[in-house]
Image (cartoon, rainbow, N blue to C red):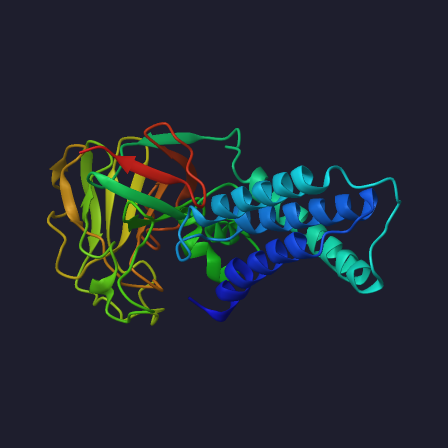
Length: 318
C-alpha cells in the first residue's frame, strides 16, 4: 500500500471513529455536525477510493462501526442536551476542521454516485470474459472520479486521440473470497498477484480481428509506456469490437481470423504494457482504425447486463 492509501483509507477513518467515540460534543448542534461530518468523510472515501488493499469490505466495516458508536452513545447518554454547542474550544476547532473535510467527502461521494448511473448512450452487453471466481472492478463508471479512462475523451489533447476507444473501459482484478489480490507486501513479481495467469475468455461469439503478442510482462510497479495496451486481442462481436488487454506474454491462444464462441479461451491475464499491476483491461468500441486500432468510437458496456463501476464485485459461480 502506498502512503496515501494508508493515510486516507486506514489512518484517517480510524482516527475519525476514535474521535467521535472518545470526544463526543455535548450540545446537539456540535454533536450533530460532528456525526454528519464523519459520516460524509467516510462515505466519500468509501465511494471514491479503490478498495483493493484494504479490501472492498473495509468501508462497510467502517460504516458498521460508526452505527455501533452512535447507538452505544445514545443508549448510554441519550440524545444530546438542549445546549446549542457545549464543546470545548479544542474540540470545537476539530469539529470545524472535520466539517470542511466533510464537504470534501460530500463532493467525492456525489461524483462517485453520479458515476454509478449508466448514461443514455449506446450500450453493448458482453458475457463475463473470465472463468468462475471472485472479481473486483478497479476502474469503471461514468465519471472520471471512479474511472480514469474517461480522461482520454478530451478531444483537445492530441496524445489521447489514438486511445479514444478505451475511454469507457473497465479494469478488473481477480480476488480471493476475502477480497485479497496479492501475496505479501508490495510484491514485484506479477505471479504473486491473484490476477496473473487467470484465463481470459471471449466475451462474445465472433472473429479475432487483431492481436498483439510477444510483449514482456513488467515487474510491479514498472510500466511499459511504449506499448500501452501490452499484449491484446480484439474480437469482432458484430457491430462492435471488444479489446482485452495487458495479457500475459506467450499466453494468447488464438490467431487473427479465428472464429470464436463466447467462453472460448483467448489467453491469460498478465501485466504487459502500461499496467501498474496485473489486471484485465476490457473495452468496447465501434471500428478498428488501421492507423490506431484503439482510436475507435468508445461504447459503454455491461457485463451480463450489469453496469460495472469501481469497487463492484462479480462472483461467477463454478
